[in-house]
View 1 (spheres, rainbow, N blue to C red):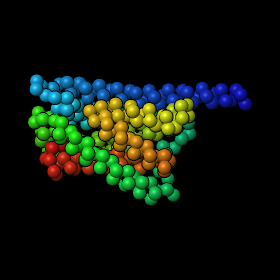
View 2: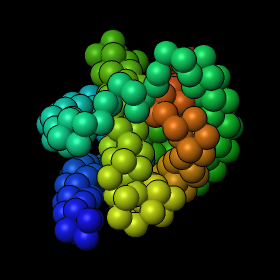
View 3: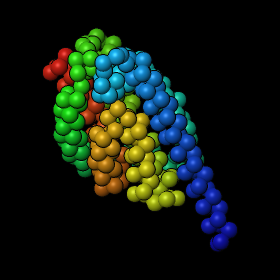
Length: 240
């Protein structure tokens, strides 16, 4: 029995290490790319909000990089789940809880959108005319790439990485809540240019995850909030 427990602990540590590796690579690569983009777009006279606004511009290039990095890391995450006989589909939702999960997702989406509006108002006050947010890009390619990268890829894959891996693997080593908070911090670091919003929104999605034990509510809220932001920028501001 003791030998079995030791082997189980060793397996849990290896799984936790692999899960942390996946999210760490994603976080530092994307965050590093965003820093590079922000630095490349900086000009004399800009304040910190203006410089940070260029972290995701040009938007098409940013979206391509975001999609590629998430897609490259996805097989490693899938293998980790399969190796431990965990069904990703059952982690996302199950037929008997689908309606409940959707309702929780809609509720989490509503809260996230409120947080997004508050954050956007603060960014608007902090930025100047030199901010990238004041530049219009209504091209079809930008719109399509933004929807794919932010509403679908980020909304689905990031929940698997930052919520699913945390709970299923790292949680067995350091505790579920602690692991989810650690990964949420990494998630916010990836979106360092809107760190406060990402961290707060992540807490909402964690709450939905813990209440339902499924990733679907967070995916709905995450992807839905990003889609809402794209639509809002397109319709209201004329800015992608």
